[in-house]
Amino acid sequence: MGSPNSNVPAFASSELKELKQKLVDGCHILDREGITDSFGHVSIRIPGTEAFLTIAGVSPGCATLDRLIWKDIIWAATKRRHMNGRFMRASCAPVPK
Image (cartoon, rainbow, N blue to C red; front, side, top):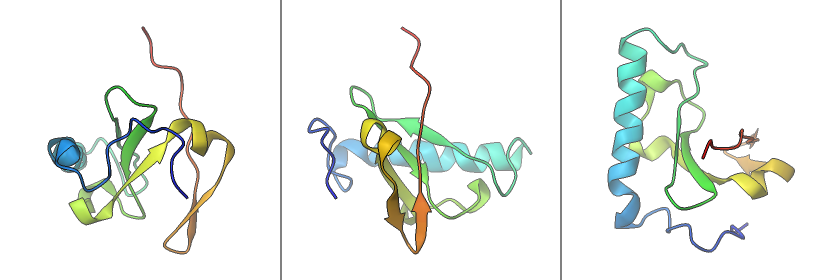
């Protein structure tokens, strides 16, 4: 189930390493400050793409690099992807220009 969005870096690429760490750090900060709860959603857009990184099956306070997934916005808007026995669905609002 590949992405039709060919400009998205591979998930394990060094290009995404810093972005992934920022997402995990942001999850922990939001949890520590009481902004999210166990059902909180945190994600980060991959610059220059129609894709984003988010946490899967875990509350933001328990986010780790191993619990991250990437989603293609266009693909996810019309399909459901199976992940660890659960269906994941994504949608987003347009990014302001």
